[in-house]
Length: 263
Image 1 (cartoon, rainbow, N blue to C red):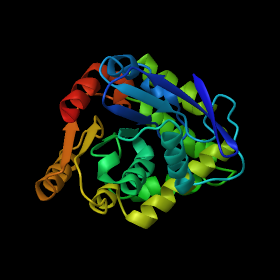
Image 2: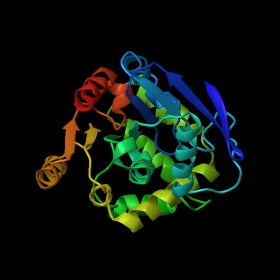
Image 3: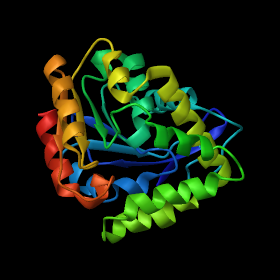
């Protein structure tokens, strides 16, 4: 891992491969570069791949005071400018999508001609999710709420990479970061309604691919197909899988779809 200081914060990142296209890999909150450990070597055969840990998500877990989603986006702009990256395609997972779309909006279609979101729940915050987000922001209940999510995420998979990622890697983030992440995710839902509504506000419009494996729901699949019919720039692609972590569970398929989308 390399390190870079932006403002008063230090970031860990990987810089792999080469090529005319640069991919910027962005995990969700309380995740880090290890989420992409299987796809980076495959993608680096064809592209330059930047894999950065968010503020406070570096190995030292160090950061300078409280921060939110807007700060994550600002960090990315500084990072890309420092590395002289003129044109890129962001690829985010889960709720890293909020910062991805904000970055795409800010940089515009000349610098960000396409973007990719992975396993980002496209509906609004249903009651159970909203309750979990709120419980996760209370010091007395955050760990119980987090552990309930962890149990759900590994309930139907025997993939050891997925299980380790959830139970060891994600569990390595402390109470303060988990509370912050759930606060910012709830704020994003309240501001935009849902990821689909957020994507509708991305201007100018440009191709967006959503790669996902879960949930297994005909209604959820249909919701995205109907959205794609109304918005031809949106391309939902479902990959067979038993978890919310296709970059760990199905890396070959993920890379195949990415290469097809980039062209």
